[in-house]
Length: 534
Ligand SMILES: CC(=O)SCCNC(=O)CCNC(=O)[C@H](O)C(C)(C)COP(=O)(O)OP(=O)(O)OC[C@H]1O[C@@H](n2cnc3c(N)ncnc32)[C@H](O)[C@@H]1OP(=O)(O)O
Ligand SMILES: O=CC(=O)O
Ligand SMILES: [Mg+2]
Picture (cartoon, rainbow, N blue to C red):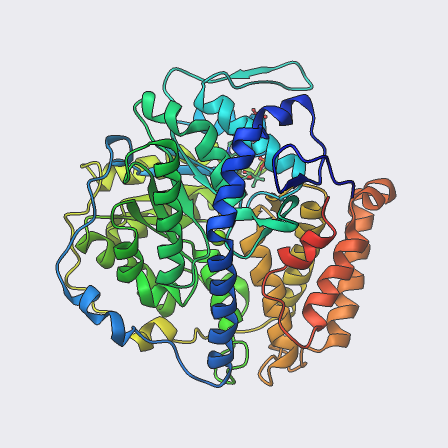
């Protein structure tokens, strides 16, 4: 990879810089991002090392619990700083990859209250997607964003648009195309830094603000790091502290034990927590991968109503409302089904049921993956949540124990479940390697989080003595490889040889095989994936 000339002391760009990209990668913006990295990269690295130590502890059989040293935070009475008016009613939020210009416009126009523009689960972090994502966001903030489709249809913003919230990459991901003092920058700090630098002042002038979703946190110390990043960034640009507002995804099993502490660390910048259900399931498999008592059934039966997921969602609501923060629900994976009215009605029914459970439990809003689902979710929340939110519903009746958060779900492991996991993981990885981070597969939305569940289950089922199919067959490496080859053949037959060759399925299958056969569990599929991503 060619390394570009130094525009800014100590900063090298190892990716293409078109004239449009240069408007984002200005010397001032690069100095800002370099400053962020110099100030915080060492702490980020130390926290990532902490994750490894914590895993080693879990591998010995030590169960997570609420922290004794922060009991005073959980037990004392305090609330977060006031929430800005355009984040008070978040009943329906749509999500989508920031790098897809048409989708950004469609999402902002969708009628949802907010749009989470994603640089994480739904975005394949190619250099082009990363910087095009920043261009799209800048143009959205300036309200100049336009798109003309290959068919000639023009897209532009309506008068009334959703509030923009941006999700930068998690702490584990690097940005290899930006080297700061010779080292790859933190993906989180690049995404946050470029967006904040270019847009914070315009957002504030427009009556909104720099709002973020923070993904994949594993502890309150990681939240403290984000808070310090926010303070530093606001001070640098002369923006009052507390202007940034963040919603933290509770999407790791360890974070579920530190919700109060996470809110506390970010109390001046806090908007709420969100139940990132898909990464949460992935994290549960990953963290307890060496625990002989933990094995999950087919992905399709690990729903929000199984006891450990229900406990987590109710605890999120109670914890948020105690602190006047919003408790956002999560993403139902069903999306509208084209050309099959009965299947479409069934998908909408599933989404409706999911949203109904969320609003009745006390969630203040929810996520949808597709504009066609905005009215469905909106109807449910409008019917059951007359006020802008329900933070006054304190849910003091809810009492969730550590054992309930950890309860292992029961259910069968089937050949269909194994086959679907293998098929979905390979197709998703192939799309991701080709630059698309969210795809419809079998009428479900698949992104990095859902694909992680699929490959993690296969890894676990191969190794776990109880990784046995309903029909009595043990899940083995040989069976996995046999099904992998059968599924690859099905994909080839379905899409034709040419599309198959262009689709990187063989490369995806190789990565998938490495992931599921590796003795050591690979923390995120996107880490080895990123080594071969452009
Ligand atoms: C676990 C988690 O992290 S969840 C959050 C992260 N995941 C996501 O954000 C996924 C978001 N959803 C998507 O990316 C898409 O809906 C997909 C990939 C699942 C399906 O996309 P498509 O196959 O393009 O859907 P479809 O063909 O039905 O799209 C119809 C129209 O809706 C638009 N659309 C679909 N999804 C979205 C969306 N999320 N935001 C905005 N517009 C959208 C399309 O751009 C298209 O617009 P057009 O009619 O103007 O051409
Ligand atoms: O980010 C959301 C999730 O479910 O994972
Ligand atoms: Mg996630």
